[in-house]
Image: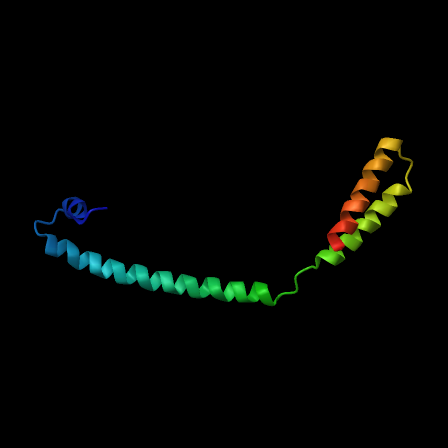
Length: 94
């Protein structure tokens, strides 16, 4: 927002009066920003240090589910769909 608009909103006659508040506000905003960014960086570090599930491990679990479903009584279309899933999952691992 233009400083002259802020000046009018605050009812200041002189722009210098408004600038005093703007400078204080800018420092406060900067301090708040750097404090928040430090917290974000700490949280990102924690996330990076946690073990992330591997794609390979997820695919093994998916293949086990597909195998379990294939043991059920399925029609031909369902069997073909499961086979497509299996093929796609194997391709992800490779």
